[in-house]
Image (cartoon, rainbow, N blue to C red; front, side, top):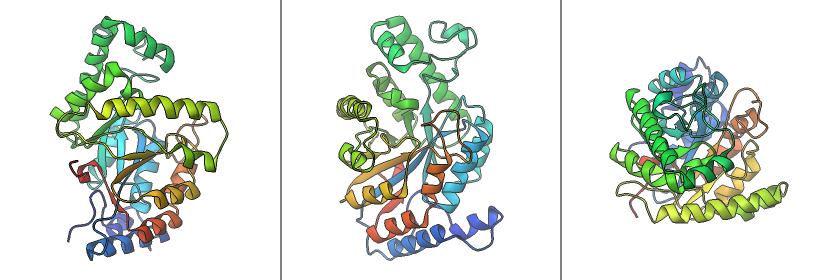
Length: 323
């Protein structure tokens, strides 16, 4: 029987990584895969473990590959205008079991479209807006800006298509893809290009607060805003595009811990969920950005063992069943 969607041969991966004996996390995952192949827990919940910001830097790219080969990572979201985009594409081509989707960047990054096609969206250096809240308000009421955002969405999808990688899914930097002026356009265009999934970040606020009650007001705001937008978006999914029932990681950006992941696993009762993280081999300039803590969690043997014990199926958005 085939392995769960999105996984690679662990022994081969360790050898290609220049390794000797597989580490404990890889061993635990092989046990989980063998158990799944035996058919005992084929109906277990599906968990997509995704890394955002693939292509942002060499430190992020190295972490994505390590978390896929030595940890529980099954999926990554590619920044097609990232500084290390070409390196990320090369790494993805060498890791065919890693599902790769588009990480749409409309804020805090560079545009893919030429400046003359999006003059109101970028500054003189081709940079996108820095402030997502202010830009979100402008976008809601400016039809010209909305047309330029549509141009930029198509440009980023075109750049992804030029890589030759299958488009697994789409999501957005800072989850800006949920903006009403963005979501419908992106969802329809992605579905036409064969994407199977889109992120709807309906996270478990209670679980997050049990682990960390800091920044309570921002977390309450995020839970309300993204909860409403996700419910709105779920009603507007085009044919062929699917979303998981739950998404974990919205409140753990830069602070993903094994204890949190194990509690999230314990909450899974069937169906599907995405856990997204921001792994990197080096700390980033932003405190909640890509970081080694998330990488360590994704490679922690206790996480792999928790998945095995819970009978969780690991995969990508292609493994999602139609509702």
